[in-house]
Length: 375
Image 1 (tube, one colour):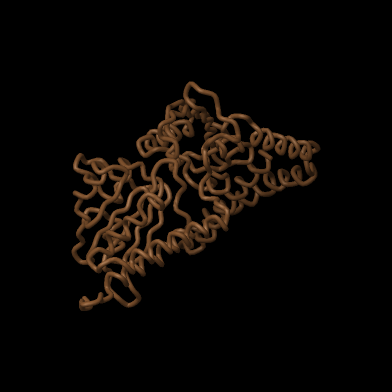
Image 2 (spheres, rainbow, N blue to C red):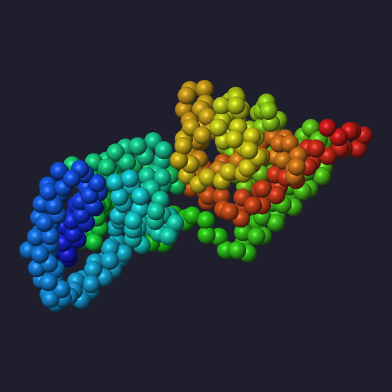
């Protein structure tokens, strides 16, 4: 395999040199002898070096142990998947290449979902930068590392992450093997209490959304026009989202309702200027719903009075930001929902249902009430 790769590199270099010789045909006539000498040299190189090398590779055929190597590789893959320790193979950017069965159970993240996404994104915001830095150092060959991190779904449990460099035979770059273990405790069994990412049964999810739609419709019908947004927020708070933030207006947003885990926490977010929340401003301007799972930008919803990002302070694991608008009508406000901690992330089905409810809320805010006029 190594000889074949070396031959390929040598052949690629030869092709590049030939291209340069072709480009040199336009040189003045008095300089053509130099180009001709170089061309003859390259022809001799092919005849004396590359061609015999090719014949050796062609006559050797497949290695006798090729089949055995494939079997060995398959065995190693099986061992990786069946290891009782949570193990992940990532690149220098912490993007997941492989996740074994124990790691999916330990983190609550399905392997198919995790592959291609940064492993750092499944950690608490405060740990992400350090984890990325250590993974990059290990990939550069600066030695094994170990650090304590926290999974975003279980922030109270410290996790020991051990990183070591690994260069699989068929991979072009050095990877990083990450072993995850609870700091000072045993690894939980496969049937532990960690709940996976959204994977609810279709019937249960549908029934829950239908119940929410019914509650929302009832609240909107009974609410006075000036209380529609507040009533809608109270329907969603708790049963559907840990945080509900309602902003009215479009060109000039004003925060009208904030419902969170506690009154003190809600007061902190209520004191924000919505104009400093990039997510809210973009929703009001573009009129597009935003669904984010493990938001990458911690400052996307602005900062509190102490300067801490709201998404980090609230331990937000998923969010929905919905403009309140009707077809061909102006944006009348923005509704933002947070889920935090170990709660299941918002699903696409829930986002679609909320998009419909957002239109209904906007209609209720616009519709004339008995004895009133349309605004």
